[in-house]
Length: 298
Length: 104
Image (cartoon, rainbow over all chains, first blue to last red; front, side, top):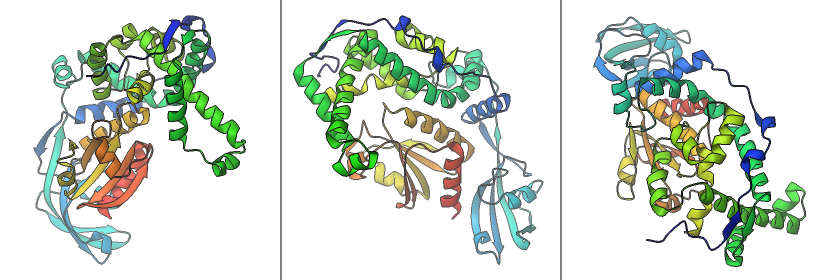
């Protein structure tokens, strides 16, 4: 197998990430309790037991057959998540309290709709327990407390996406500028070509953006060259061997979403970023970016 | 329900009544956000089938489906692609599209 971590370019001396000021990127993170509650329910739903029910309640999945002069409401064996409103919130609300097998008429958009409830399925959400954490198959969730933390932290993944990306870019550029590299000309050329190929820039696009074509090409090529630096800094941080890489990457691919001690312990640059930008919350997406070039070079 | 496609089972998975196909890559940040939304939706709407295609593991599936960027979603009914959507959607946008295509 090809050693995907082997690059001919070398990092002679890594810049110091700890001296880079990222305070401008810090954002306030306050937990939205309603969102946290929704995220908790969404998480628990993955492990919910489905049981047959006799009477429709909000959030049940009901299978109905309906007929009406309204074309949309002529359906057979149509599954609905009651209360979600994807089909018709008006119809769904009127079904609440109906019995399995019941036939009747509801009013939608002022028109009668004949409905039969064929089946009702209800979710029974599990308790948050250590056993559920083990059952989740997510190695980041080791106990009940981890699940609660994960569900509360979920909302920050979205909130951080922009600021963290900007902070990460600034951090890596600053560290790269403070580092000493010995770049292999072939790898540099490859990275420049790769970047240009991916950008697929044309004179027309350059004119549209308002930058002279050759200048734009050089900017894009340089961004490709900077990937060499990013990759080398990533290698410097972690992992160092193919075995490490193979052991590591699937965890992030499979589980995603939140930071944990593994990330902190393994990646000092990210740990710093976490502290500055996100307090206790951050995900590991940025780390993944470090590996892009290595894949391309493989 | 979420299925992971391979080159061998991809076409078969698309023949289900209604399918949302998620072309993703392992190194794509927005893909991971979208993946979380899809997991939630799979749990919330058990009658919606979700098929995930890892374009890193199955590049040929990406090429044959002309996937230029990830994430890309296909909304498929009985094997027919109703809509292609490139890029990250919000959870609400995703639900709206599923509702539109599932219920017609």
